[in-house]
Length: 451
Image (cartoon, rainbow, N blue to C red; front, side, top):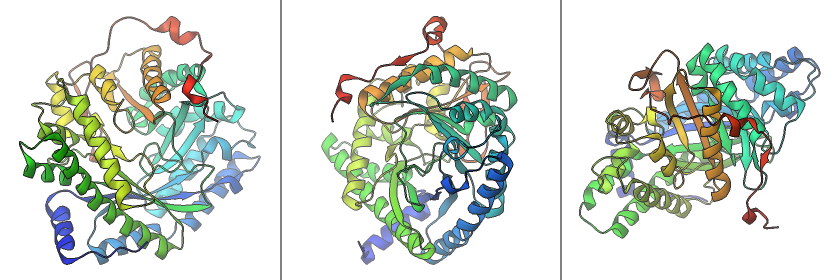
Protein backbone atom coordinates (compact mmCIF):
# COMPACT_ATOMS: atom_id res chain seq x y z
CA UNK A 1 0.00 0.00 0.00
CA UNK A 2 1.48 3.32 -1.04
CA UNK A 3 1.04 6.49 0.96
CA UNK A 4 1.59 10.07 -0.16
CA UNK A 5 1.96 12.88 2.37
CA UNK A 6 0.60 16.33 1.61
CA UNK A 7 2.62 19.45 2.46
CA UNK A 8 0.76 20.04 5.73
CA UNK A 9 1.49 16.52 6.98
CA UNK A 10 5.17 16.86 5.99
CA UNK A 11 5.47 20.04 8.05
CA UNK A 12 3.72 18.40 10.99
CA UNK A 13 6.10 15.44 10.82
CA UNK A 14 9.15 17.72 10.72
CA UNK A 15 7.87 19.50 13.84
CA UNK A 16 7.27 16.16 15.56
CA UNK A 17 10.85 15.07 14.86
CA UNK A 18 12.52 18.38 15.70
CA UNK A 19 10.57 19.36 18.80
CA UNK A 20 8.53 16.41 20.12
CA UNK A 21 10.98 13.48 20.30
CA UNK A 22 9.37 11.55 17.43
CA UNK A 23 11.64 8.82 16.12
CA UNK A 24 11.73 5.33 14.75
CA UNK A 25 12.85 3.61 17.92
CA UNK A 26 14.09 0.51 16.13
CA UNK A 27 14.40 -1.26 12.82
CA UNK A 28 14.77 -4.90 13.77
CA UNK A 29 15.72 -7.62 11.29
CA UNK A 30 14.40 -11.03 12.27
CA UNK A 31 16.59 -13.91 11.11
CA UNK A 32 15.90 -17.64 11.24
CA UNK A 33 18.79 -19.67 12.63
CA UNK A 34 17.19 -23.08 12.27
CA UNK A 35 19.72 -24.07 9.60
CA UNK A 36 22.56 -23.39 12.05
CA UNK A 37 21.82 -26.45 14.17
CA UNK A 38 24.81 -28.74 14.84
CA UNK A 39 25.87 -31.33 17.40
CA UNK A 40 28.92 -29.30 18.47
CA UNK A 41 28.12 -26.06 20.28
CA UNK A 42 31.32 -24.47 18.92
CA UNK A 43 30.42 -25.38 15.34
CA UNK A 44 26.86 -24.17 15.91
CA UNK A 45 28.27 -20.89 17.24
CA UNK A 46 30.41 -20.45 14.13
CA UNK A 47 27.43 -21.05 11.87
CA UNK A 48 25.35 -18.53 13.84
CA UNK A 49 28.07 -15.88 13.59
CA UNK A 50 28.54 -16.40 9.86
CA UNK A 51 24.84 -16.35 9.03
CA UNK A 52 24.16 -13.23 11.08
CA UNK A 53 27.07 -11.34 9.50
CA UNK A 54 26.06 -12.43 6.02
CA UNK A 55 22.32 -11.79 6.33
CA UNK A 56 22.37 -8.49 8.23
CA UNK A 57 25.48 -7.03 6.60
CA UNK A 58 23.58 -4.11 5.03
CA UNK A 59 21.14 -3.40 7.88
CA UNK A 60 23.01 -0.50 9.48
CA UNK A 61 24.14 1.15 6.20
CA UNK A 62 20.59 0.99 4.79
CA UNK A 63 19.05 2.44 7.95
CA UNK A 64 21.63 5.24 8.01
CA UNK A 65 20.82 5.98 4.37
CA UNK A 66 17.10 6.22 5.13
CA UNK A 67 17.82 8.52 8.08
CA UNK A 68 19.81 10.88 5.88
CA UNK A 69 17.42 10.82 2.95
CA UNK A 70 14.17 11.26 4.87
CA UNK A 71 15.46 13.12 7.94
CA UNK A 72 13.80 10.56 10.23
CA UNK A 73 15.90 9.46 13.24
CA UNK A 74 16.28 5.69 13.55
CA UNK A 75 17.56 5.32 17.10
CA UNK A 76 18.34 1.59 17.13
CA UNK A 77 19.26 -0.99 14.53
CA UNK A 78 18.71 -4.47 15.93
CA UNK A 79 18.48 -8.15 15.10
CA UNK A 80 16.25 -10.85 16.56
CA UNK A 81 16.82 -14.57 16.02
CA UNK A 82 15.04 -17.87 16.40
CA UNK A 83 14.83 -18.86 20.09
CA UNK A 84 18.27 -20.30 20.71
CA UNK A 85 16.90 -23.25 22.68
CA UNK A 86 15.42 -24.50 19.37
CA UNK A 87 18.58 -23.86 17.37
CA UNK A 88 20.77 -25.59 19.96
CA UNK A 89 18.58 -28.63 20.51
CA UNK A 90 21.07 -30.87 18.67
CA UNK A 91 24.07 -29.64 20.67
CA UNK A 92 25.61 -32.13 23.04
CA UNK A 93 27.12 -29.63 25.50
CA UNK A 94 25.29 -28.37 28.59
CA UNK A 95 26.44 -24.73 28.47
CA UNK A 96 25.08 -22.50 25.69
CA UNK A 97 27.19 -19.47 26.63
CA UNK A 98 29.36 -19.88 23.48
CA UNK A 99 26.24 -19.30 21.38
CA UNK A 100 25.53 -16.03 23.20
CA UNK A 101 29.13 -14.97 22.68
CA UNK A 102 28.85 -15.70 18.96
CA UNK A 103 25.70 -13.56 18.79
CA UNK A 104 27.53 -10.82 20.68
CA UNK A 105 30.51 -10.89 18.29
CA UNK A 106 28.16 -10.71 15.32
CA UNK A 107 26.32 -7.74 16.84
CA UNK A 108 29.61 -5.89 17.30
CA UNK A 109 30.69 -6.72 13.75
CA UNK A 110 27.38 -5.50 12.33
CA UNK A 111 27.36 -2.34 14.44
CA UNK A 112 23.86 -2.99 15.80
CA UNK A 113 22.61 -1.96 19.24
CA UNK A 114 21.18 -5.24 20.56
CA UNK A 115 20.48 -8.78 19.42
CA UNK A 116 17.57 -10.69 20.92
CA UNK A 117 16.64 -14.34 20.98
CA UNK A 118 18.69 -16.08 23.65
CA UNK A 119 15.30 -17.45 24.51
CA UNK A 120 13.22 -20.48 25.43
CA UNK A 121 9.50 -21.19 25.07
CA UNK A 122 8.43 -23.37 27.98
CA UNK A 123 4.85 -22.40 28.81
CA UNK A 124 3.80 -26.06 29.03
CA UNK A 125 7.03 -27.81 29.94
CA UNK A 126 10.75 -28.08 29.19
CA UNK A 127 12.82 -29.76 26.56
CA UNK A 128 16.40 -30.64 27.51
CA UNK A 129 17.52 -27.70 25.41
CA UNK A 130 15.17 -25.30 27.23
CA UNK A 131 16.70 -26.30 30.56
CA UNK A 132 20.24 -25.93 29.24
CA UNK A 133 19.52 -22.48 27.87
CA UNK A 134 17.83 -21.26 31.07
CA UNK A 135 20.72 -22.50 33.20
CA UNK A 136 23.14 -20.72 30.85
CA UNK A 137 21.41 -17.33 31.17
CA UNK A 138 23.35 -15.83 34.11
CA UNK A 139 26.74 -16.45 32.56
CA UNK A 140 25.60 -15.81 28.97
CA UNK A 141 24.07 -12.40 29.67
CA UNK A 142 26.95 -11.40 31.94
CA UNK A 143 29.70 -12.35 29.51
CA UNK A 144 27.99 -10.69 26.53
CA UNK A 145 27.24 -6.99 26.10
CA UNK A 146 24.56 -6.83 23.40
CA UNK A 147 22.68 -10.12 23.78
CA UNK A 148 19.14 -10.11 25.19
CA UNK A 149 17.19 -13.11 26.44
CA UNK A 150 13.65 -14.10 27.26
CA UNK A 151 11.69 -17.05 28.60
CA UNK A 152 7.99 -17.60 28.00
CA UNK A 153 6.50 -19.25 31.09
CA UNK A 154 2.79 -19.18 30.32
CA UNK A 155 0.02 -18.62 27.80
CA UNK A 156 -3.74 -18.43 27.70
CA UNK A 157 -3.85 -21.76 25.84
CA UNK A 158 -1.36 -23.64 28.03
CA UNK A 159 -1.69 -22.10 31.48
CA UNK A 160 1.36 -21.20 33.58
CA UNK A 161 4.34 -23.51 33.97
CA UNK A 162 5.08 -22.91 37.64
CA UNK A 163 8.28 -24.95 37.42
CA UNK A 164 9.65 -22.42 34.94
CA UNK A 165 8.35 -19.55 37.10
CA UNK A 166 10.22 -20.98 40.10
CA UNK A 167 13.32 -21.47 38.02
CA UNK A 168 13.31 -17.94 36.62
CA UNK A 169 13.19 -16.38 40.09
CA UNK A 170 16.47 -18.13 40.82
CA UNK A 171 17.94 -17.22 37.44
CA UNK A 172 17.19 -13.51 37.92
CA UNK A 173 18.67 -13.68 41.43
CA UNK A 174 21.83 -15.40 40.19
CA UNK A 175 22.21 -13.05 37.22
CA UNK A 176 21.99 -10.02 39.52
CA UNK A 177 24.80 -11.38 41.68
CA UNK A 178 27.04 -11.52 38.63
CA UNK A 179 25.90 -8.26 37.02
CA UNK A 180 22.57 -6.42 37.49
CA UNK A 181 22.82 -5.20 33.88
CA UNK A 182 22.28 -8.80 32.84
CA UNK A 183 18.81 -8.60 34.39
CA UNK A 184 18.06 -5.50 32.30
CA UNK A 185 18.55 -7.73 29.24
CA UNK A 186 16.23 -10.50 30.44
CA UNK A 187 12.43 -10.68 30.13
CA UNK A 188 10.03 -13.30 31.47
CA UNK A 189 6.88 -13.49 29.32
CA UNK A 190 3.37 -14.82 29.28
CA UNK A 191 1.84 -14.95 25.79
CA UNK A 192 5.06 -13.84 24.08
CA UNK A 193 4.57 -12.68 20.48
CA UNK A 194 6.69 -13.77 17.53
CA UNK A 195 7.11 -10.40 15.79
CA UNK A 196 8.11 -8.04 18.62
CA UNK A 197 10.88 -5.65 17.46
CA UNK A 198 11.53 -4.21 20.95
CA UNK A 199 14.28 -5.43 23.25
CA UNK A 200 14.85 -7.12 25.52
CA UNK A 201 12.04 -9.48 24.55
CA UNK A 202 12.48 -9.68 20.78
CA UNK A 203 12.90 -13.08 19.14
CA UNK A 204 12.18 -14.39 15.64
CA UNK A 205 9.17 -16.68 15.94
CA UNK A 206 9.01 -20.07 14.27
CA UNK A 207 6.02 -18.92 12.20
CA UNK A 208 8.02 -16.07 10.69
CA UNK A 209 9.76 -16.06 7.28
CA UNK A 210 13.44 -16.78 6.79
CA UNK A 211 14.16 -13.09 7.25
CA UNK A 212 11.87 -10.12 7.94
CA UNK A 213 11.96 -6.40 8.78
CA UNK A 214 9.90 -5.16 11.75
CA UNK A 215 9.83 -1.51 12.77
CA UNK A 216 9.07 -0.08 16.20
CA UNK A 217 7.87 3.53 16.35
CA UNK A 218 7.61 5.58 19.53
CA UNK A 219 6.14 9.00 20.14
CA UNK A 220 5.16 9.83 23.74
CA UNK A 221 6.32 13.41 23.22
CA UNK A 222 4.12 13.81 20.15
CA UNK A 223 1.04 12.52 21.98
CA UNK A 224 1.80 14.78 24.96
CA UNK A 225 2.10 17.80 22.66
CA UNK A 226 -1.21 16.99 20.97
CA UNK A 227 -3.00 16.70 24.32
CA UNK A 228 -1.90 20.18 25.36
CA UNK A 229 -4.31 21.53 22.72
CA UNK A 230 -7.37 19.88 24.26
CA UNK A 231 -7.16 20.84 27.93
CA UNK A 232 -10.60 20.79 29.55
CA UNK A 233 -12.19 18.82 26.70
CA UNK A 234 -14.33 15.74 27.29
CA UNK A 235 -12.68 12.33 27.49
CA UNK A 236 -13.94 11.22 24.08
CA UNK A 237 -12.18 14.25 22.54
CA UNK A 238 -8.98 13.19 24.30
CA UNK A 239 -9.32 9.67 22.90
CA UNK A 240 -9.90 10.97 19.38
CA UNK A 241 -6.87 13.27 19.63
CA UNK A 242 -4.64 10.38 20.70
CA UNK A 243 -6.03 8.18 17.94
CA UNK A 244 -5.37 10.77 15.22
CA UNK A 245 -1.85 11.35 16.52
CA UNK A 246 -1.11 7.62 16.61
CA UNK A 247 -2.31 7.42 13.00
CA UNK A 248 0.32 9.96 11.89
CA UNK A 249 3.10 8.29 13.87
CA UNK A 250 2.26 4.87 12.41
CA UNK A 251 2.28 6.23 8.86
CA UNK A 252 5.83 7.41 9.36
CA UNK A 253 6.80 4.00 10.69
CA UNK A 254 5.23 2.26 7.73
CA UNK A 255 7.12 4.53 5.33
CA UNK A 256 10.43 3.58 6.96
CA UNK A 257 9.50 -0.10 7.11
CA UNK A 258 8.57 -0.28 3.44
CA UNK A 259 11.69 1.58 2.39
CA UNK A 260 13.96 -0.65 4.51
CA UNK A 261 12.20 -3.74 3.17
CA UNK A 262 12.70 -2.64 -0.43
CA UNK A 263 16.35 -1.65 -0.02
CA UNK A 264 17.26 -4.83 1.87
CA UNK A 265 15.13 -7.13 -0.34
CA UNK A 266 13.60 -8.54 2.83
CA UNK A 267 9.85 -8.94 3.51
CA UNK A 268 8.13 -6.23 5.57
CA UNK A 269 6.65 -7.73 8.72
CA UNK A 270 4.96 -5.32 11.13
CA UNK A 271 4.95 -1.79 12.46
CA UNK A 272 4.85 -1.85 16.24
CA UNK A 273 3.44 1.43 17.52
CA UNK A 274 4.45 1.41 21.15
CA UNK A 275 4.72 4.56 23.24
CA UNK A 276 8.11 3.55 24.60
CA UNK A 277 9.45 6.38 26.78
CA UNK A 278 13.02 7.48 27.36
CA UNK A 279 14.60 9.29 30.33
CA UNK A 280 14.59 12.50 28.25
CA UNK A 281 12.30 15.28 29.49
CA UNK A 282 9.18 15.44 27.32
CA UNK A 283 9.31 11.77 26.28
CA UNK A 284 7.23 10.29 29.07
CA UNK A 285 4.08 8.15 29.22
CA UNK A 286 3.55 9.39 32.79
CA UNK A 287 3.38 12.95 31.44
CA UNK A 288 0.64 11.90 29.01
CA UNK A 289 -1.42 10.46 31.87
CA UNK A 290 -0.96 13.68 33.82
CA UNK A 291 -2.04 15.75 30.81
CA UNK A 292 -5.21 13.65 30.66
CA UNK A 293 -5.99 15.04 34.09
CA UNK A 294 -4.07 13.25 36.83
CA UNK A 295 -2.13 15.30 39.35
CA UNK A 296 0.52 12.58 39.40
CA UNK A 297 0.92 9.22 37.69
CA UNK A 298 0.02 6.50 40.19
CA UNK A 299 -2.93 8.16 41.92
CA UNK A 300 -6.47 6.80 41.69
CA UNK A 301 -7.65 7.09 38.09
CA UNK A 302 -4.28 6.13 36.59
CA UNK A 303 -5.43 2.70 35.40
CA UNK A 304 -8.48 4.17 33.64
CA UNK A 305 -6.41 6.89 31.95
CA UNK A 306 -3.86 4.32 30.80
CA UNK A 307 -6.61 2.09 29.40
CA UNK A 308 -7.92 5.02 27.36
CA UNK A 309 -4.42 5.79 26.08
CA UNK A 310 -3.58 2.21 25.15
CA UNK A 311 -6.85 1.64 23.30
CA UNK A 312 -6.63 4.90 21.35
CA UNK A 313 -3.04 4.19 20.32
CA UNK A 314 -3.98 0.75 18.99
CA UNK A 315 -7.00 2.10 17.08
CA UNK A 316 -4.94 4.85 15.47
CA UNK A 317 -2.29 2.35 14.46
CA UNK A 318 -4.75 -0.10 12.92
CA UNK A 319 -6.33 2.74 10.93
CA UNK A 320 -2.92 3.68 9.52
CA UNK A 321 -1.50 0.30 8.55
CA UNK A 322 -2.67 -3.19 7.75
CA UNK A 323 0.52 -4.55 9.29
CA UNK A 324 0.37 -3.35 12.89
CA UNK A 325 1.78 -6.00 15.22
CA UNK A 326 4.29 -6.68 17.93
CA UNK A 327 3.22 -5.23 21.27
CA UNK A 328 1.60 -2.00 20.04
CA UNK A 329 0.32 0.17 22.89
CA UNK A 330 1.87 2.04 25.82
CA UNK A 331 4.92 0.85 27.76
CA UNK A 332 5.50 1.71 31.43
CA UNK A 333 9.18 0.91 32.13
CA UNK A 334 9.94 2.68 35.38
CA UNK A 335 13.64 3.36 34.78
CA UNK A 336 13.08 4.69 31.25
CA UNK A 337 10.36 7.25 32.03
CA UNK A 338 11.23 10.47 33.88
CA UNK A 339 7.64 10.88 35.08
CA UNK A 340 7.46 7.32 36.39
CA UNK A 341 10.76 7.76 38.22
CA UNK A 342 9.50 10.96 39.86
CA UNK A 343 6.22 9.35 40.92
CA UNK A 344 8.02 6.30 42.33
CA UNK A 345 10.49 8.43 44.27
CA UNK A 346 7.61 10.44 45.74
CA UNK A 347 5.93 7.22 46.86
CA UNK A 348 2.86 7.82 44.69
CA UNK A 349 3.62 4.96 42.30
CA UNK A 350 4.22 1.55 43.85
CA UNK A 351 4.47 -2.02 42.62
CA UNK A 352 0.82 -2.80 43.34
CA UNK A 353 -0.34 0.13 41.21
CA UNK A 354 2.05 -0.79 38.44
CA UNK A 355 0.65 -4.32 38.47
CA UNK A 356 -2.89 -2.94 38.14
CA UNK A 357 -1.77 -0.75 35.25
CA UNK A 358 -0.35 -3.77 33.40
CA UNK A 359 -3.89 -5.15 33.11
CA UNK A 360 -4.69 -2.47 30.53
CA UNK A 361 -1.37 -1.52 28.86
CA UNK A 362 1.21 -3.25 26.70
CA UNK A 363 3.60 -5.72 28.31
CA UNK A 364 3.99 -5.52 32.08
CA UNK A 365 6.29 -4.85 35.06
CA UNK A 366 9.22 -3.42 33.17
CA UNK A 367 12.65 -2.24 34.36
CA UNK A 368 11.76 -2.28 38.04
CA UNK A 369 14.54 -2.23 40.61
CA UNK A 370 13.93 -4.20 43.82
CA UNK A 371 16.15 -4.62 46.90
CA UNK A 372 19.26 -6.66 46.23
CA UNK A 373 18.49 -9.13 49.02
CA UNK A 374 15.07 -10.08 47.60
CA UNK A 375 14.72 -13.89 47.87
CA UNK A 376 14.33 -15.85 44.61
CA UNK A 377 10.86 -17.09 45.61
CA UNK A 378 9.61 -13.50 45.90
CA UNK A 379 10.91 -12.76 42.40
CA UNK A 380 9.10 -15.89 41.21
CA UNK A 381 5.88 -14.81 42.91
CA UNK A 382 5.99 -11.43 41.15
CA UNK A 383 6.45 -13.26 37.85
CA UNK A 384 3.53 -15.57 38.67
CA UNK A 385 1.21 -12.65 39.44
CA UNK A 386 2.04 -10.92 36.17
CA UNK A 387 1.78 -14.13 34.15
CA UNK A 388 -1.68 -14.71 35.64
CA UNK A 389 -2.80 -11.29 34.40
CA UNK A 390 -1.60 -12.17 30.91
CA UNK A 391 -3.10 -15.65 30.92
CA UNK A 392 -6.55 -14.62 32.16
CA UNK A 393 -6.79 -11.50 29.99
CA UNK A 394 -5.39 -13.16 26.84
CA UNK A 395 -2.69 -10.51 26.49
CA UNK A 396 1.07 -10.34 26.52
CA UNK A 397 2.56 -9.57 29.91
CA UNK A 398 6.18 -9.56 30.96
CA UNK A 399 8.46 -8.99 33.91
CA UNK A 400 11.89 -7.35 33.84
CA UNK A 401 13.12 -7.12 37.42
CA UNK A 402 16.54 -5.90 38.53
CA UNK A 403 17.62 -6.90 42.04
CA UNK A 404 19.88 -3.98 42.97
CA UNK A 405 22.66 -5.78 44.80
CA UNK A 406 23.96 -3.75 47.74
CA UNK A 407 21.12 -1.23 47.55
CA UNK A 408 18.03 -0.70 49.69
CA UNK A 409 14.60 0.83 49.16
CA UNK A 410 14.82 4.45 48.06
CA UNK A 411 18.33 4.25 46.61
CA UNK A 412 18.91 4.51 42.85
CA UNK A 413 20.51 2.14 40.40
CA UNK A 414 21.83 3.65 37.15
CA UNK A 415 21.88 1.77 33.85
CA UNK A 416 22.84 4.58 31.46
CA UNK A 417 21.56 5.44 27.99
CA UNK A 418 17.98 4.59 27.10
CA UNK A 419 17.76 2.27 30.12
CA UNK A 420 17.96 5.26 32.48
CA UNK A 421 17.93 4.80 36.24
CA UNK A 422 15.42 3.50 38.74
CA UNK A 423 14.63 3.94 42.42
CA UNK A 424 14.64 0.69 44.38
CA UNK A 425 10.98 -0.05 45.12
CA UNK A 426 9.60 -1.68 48.29
CA UNK A 427 8.05 -5.15 48.27
CA UNK A 428 5.50 -6.76 50.58
CA UNK A 429 6.72 -8.64 53.63
CA UNK A 430 5.85 -12.33 53.96
CA UNK A 431 7.08 -15.37 52.10
CA UNK A 432 5.43 -17.10 49.11
CA UNK A 433 7.95 -19.95 49.36
CA UNK A 434 5.44 -22.78 49.91
CA UNK A 435 3.32 -21.60 46.97
CA UNK A 436 6.25 -21.29 44.59
CA UNK A 437 7.90 -24.58 45.59
CA UNK A 438 4.77 -26.58 44.79
CA UNK A 439 5.67 -26.45 41.09
CA UNK A 440 3.33 -27.99 38.53
CA UNK A 441 1.14 -26.06 36.14
CA UNK A 442 -1.68 -23.58 36.71
CA UNK A 443 -4.35 -24.80 34.27
CA UNK A 444 -5.42 -22.69 31.33
CA UNK A 445 -8.61 -20.66 31.91
CA UNK A 446 -11.98 -21.82 30.66
CA UNK A 447 -12.09 -19.26 27.87
CA UNK A 448 -8.96 -20.82 26.34
CA UNK A 449 -11.17 -23.59 24.90
CA UNK A 450 -12.15 -21.79 21.73
CA UNK A 451 -11.37 -24.31 19.01
